[in-house]
Length: 309
Image (cartoon, rainbow, N blue to C red; front, side, top):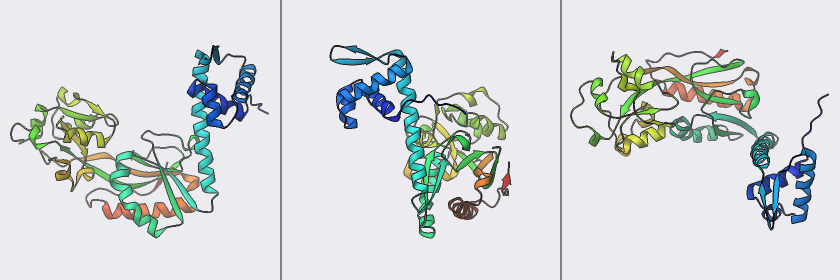
């Protein structure tokens, strides 16, 4: 049987607060304890660890190097424990909750504007959303499903195809110094790149039979909303999913300098652990999401069936 050496919660809470403030007084005020009670908890923790966490100097305390490192680790652990606790409390509240990992721009521009319809159809289910842009293991997070862009390659999961993605270049009209007749003309201007899709411009130009080292040059932004903002600010030309800007070009002050159709090889998927397929919150959300996606899906993009991976 494994024996845990984890210190008591009271000691960890006292230490985290004291480390964050570098003050026993402020920690005591925050935790509704006396300063001497906080000091005793810290002393007990240091004795258990065999490490000095603070250096006492006159009327103040200063974290040691070990204390600073342990403080960061303890804070991260307590924050995760708090999220896990809130999540399990939600599940036990009598309502149906789904913890969904989303891509930020997809959620804000496509999913959330449609969620009122879901709420009206299924008032008994609540969908909590958190941002997660990288692949992750469901066993190691509180998420029960994810909206993923790419290929359905997560082991131990099932995935449902939502829709593919057409990408278009956008920029401020004032950026252009002359007419843009071909895709190659865009290489005269700064290109704005996505850090999560670093090869997007190179692939887009390759579809137009253009190979040029300039397709890799330019500044990079993490989110599509940042790319759109950069293009709107006149910093360059951004390559973004068409549905993010469709109908809003005038609002953003943007134009599509050359209208070349380009469909990405990857697509949006709903991904979830196979054993959760029959959970009621996931089941009703999945049914609703697939209905929304099929109504949105362009007719000329292929439809992939649900597939276990």
